Length: 350
Image 1 (cartoon, rainbow, N blue to C red):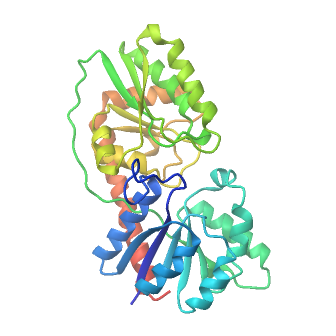
Image 2 (cartoon, one colour):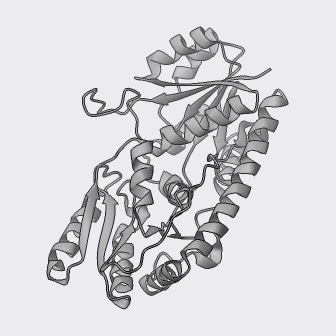
Image 3 (cartoon, helix red, strand yellow):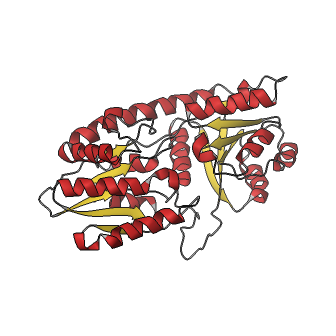
């Protein structure tokens, strides 16, 4: 019987005063916790730990004695596995990749590390997106042409708990709350979505409150937040404004989501989009891009066309419950498939 240990790395800027005791209030932590809970509910013993660095892994594996260790994201130096494999020769190590290739291009060591990981026995790469699965498979088959590499790359998609809320929509306010939550990164496309939200608010003759998470700036996202601030400062006389929210624990974040009228997630690259799922789970309609694998494509928008984004915002505003019901249905179908894939993998003794 499989026994699974999820291992995450504590954030570099961890401060016990500022951050939670786990040291993570991130999508990565939430994603792993969802899967940990799902496996336990399906009768597969599982545990999740957060460690300071590479050197803590041996201690956690020795203590828990898992059959499989899932390293969430690329943070373990490949050479560490030469030591870990000797200490734990019967453990299967799974390095789980959470990004598509366009996003991965911003991780300077990714290709080197992925190629090195695959050279170790009992180390497997797991992708949470089908396109990334194909690309990593081609990469490793080309790097190791004399070896059968298919088993080295597997598909383990994201899971999301099916705990959905409903929401009543009030349209007689003189303001409209549109959020574009998530870390500020160029591929998240915040600035164009802000322009689309302004167009939409002008169309319905309301003052826009554009909500963002300004507490996490990543992967050269500094210019993005500066442009957002400049945009709304310049438009201050119009009544449109940007509202900054600091990163918060999941329970608090869901309460914030529930206060929104519409969520925007028209990104250039996604593998799942937990923020969009959080909004839909609280009964808030979303406008995403077709990069979100579970979102209803006709309600998604072109990430390079602010007119299209504004039009889809208007549809979501006019028919919010239809948007929510369709996306909740598709999210449920996606996560049911995820549960089947994970339980099959860990019950067949792979």
